[in-house]
Every structure is written in C-alpha cells, then in structure tokens.
Amino acid sequence: MEEKEDYFNETYELLKKYSDDRLLLLKIQTAQKTGKLISKLVLISVSALLLFFLLFFVSIMLGYFFAAVTGSLFIGFSIVAGIYLLLFILFILLFKNFISKKIMDMIAVIFFENNNAGEDDDEE
Image (cartoon, rainbow, N blue to C red):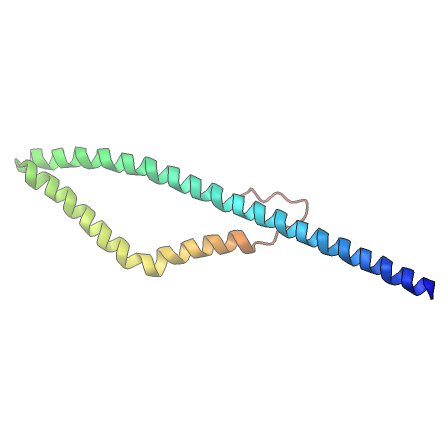
C-alpha cells in the first residue's frame, strides 16, 4: 500500500515540476517575443523619425525650387502641399487592404513563430 502512495507522491512531484517548467518556458518565450516586437517597433520609430526629417528638408527644397520655377512662393509650396495631399489619399486608400495586413502579419509571425531549441533566429 505504501508503494502506491510513494508512486502517487512521486508522480505528483514530477507533474508539478513539469508544469512549473512549462510555465517558465512560456514566460521566457513571451519575454523573448515581446522583446523582439519592441525592438522592431523602436527600429521602425527611429527610421520613421529620420525619414520625417529627410522629407521635411526635401519638401522645403522642393517648395523653393517650384517657387523659383513658377515665380511665386505661394504656388511653389502649394505644389508640394498638393503632392503630399495626393500621397495622403493614396495612403488612406491602400492602408486597409495592404499596409494593415502587413503589420498584422508581422506581429503574428513574431508571436507564433516556432522556436527550435538551440537555433538562433536573428537571421531576419
């Protein structure tokens, strides 16, 4: 009778250790995937900020260029504003069908990728 009790106690301890190990693995994987997502967001944010400044100064240059070509500062900068208005409309039209799907796919890939033990997945 005591052997059965030892068996059940031993099985309980093994099951408890297994569930603790699985929980720890889940926490580690969640931390890894969250870190990967945050690092990609930081990369995208810094890139977007630098791109913003680049476009800002190029826009000023284009405004003055078109002003020199047309002879009117107002018309030159209006042309640049019109270009940005067209880009904005194009972005709004394409966002729902293409851009938002790409963002959702990127997040899904990060959270649902299958990590194999011992492999380094920083190849992206």
